[in-house]
Image (cartoon, rainbow over all chains, first blue to last red; front, side, top):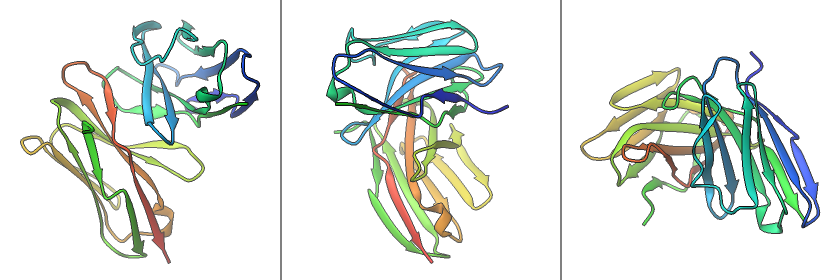
Length: 113
Length: 109
């Protein structure tokens, strides 16, 4: 398996624009996680899905953030409208079950100017 | 006070040295994870443990549930071990992962 695949690797966008980050989990994994990493706050869990269903989205910072998992092989994290403080590295991870070892994607570095 | 504390924040070592990174936590947990993040940014899961000790190559992770403390040891350190090592605990109450701020390790030849 190619591992968790995220796209794009880098994204630069202007404030106010919509940003969509994509993730393909490892085939057969039932849990998918979205994390954000900043210098100030380190790694933070934004939301996680179990069997395509959002289980806990309490880490999503604002209504500007939304995440979907339409099927077992694809998830998106959308920010609309984007703001400079959203600049961070966004990681997607998947695991076989919710409480087993997680495998991380390479991350998407988002810069909002 | 952070629920997960790591020490030291920064660590410099000479190649071949034995390295220990510590993680203390204040919440009840169901599991503890050690992650490695390389300068390129990729994150790799090293260990997940809920008791005792695990070993993988030159890496050893231990956890003491009573003392709420875990250590990550690296034997015969090598420059390629240079990375940020992150401790994360899964809360026993909420099932959420809570991350430490990481330990930046640099190993010089």
